[in-house]
Length: 242
Image (cartoon, rainbow, N blue to C red; front, side, top):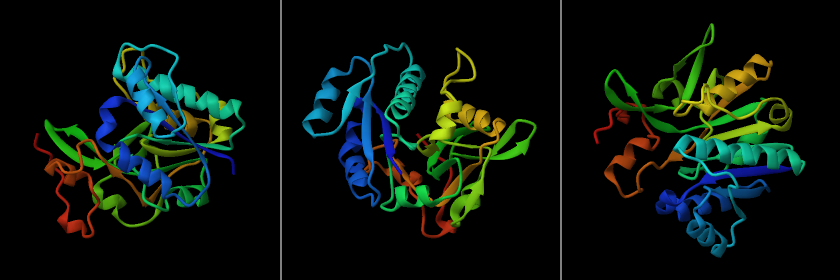
């Protein structure tokens, strides 16, 4: 398999860059890696180049955070198609892959295969941490999986999942584009992609063996501990206090 790992990144993730690159270097499956830096972040581009990383600046300017992300993902999708890759693995630059992540993802039966990681959500007025994996409820509706629901190792058919660690086969990339639900959307390009892919009959799964570490805070910040997977489910705490 000719595989591209695509990373949309920006300078605010400098605090985890060294750990991120180290996690990529520990993967056991050969692949190409391409970083896409937000348009205008020339300084961060030069830093990544100084680290001998394969990096380009997104050619399109953007006005909002989500537009920057979507532009970068569109660039990577087209690059993968133009360069003849068999699959594209999106990895967010604050998501650390476990050592066997790429091997496990490429061995999983599915057209879109996600790894799992934890993210903060606003539920009922509280900020809680949960897996970015959604159960299909039918009728176009999805529901977040609980921590307990993905803690055991399994392959789940899912309604949607996050792009923070997501392997997409070429046949899906050829038919499904990247976009948000509306021009005013503040996100959800990953959920929309999953819904569009499933409407086309593609099999979308999450492999919970691939438990990634999300790093929305520096690793020495006490809040970072809530985004780490626990050895025992009973040790899990879901509420995040800022």
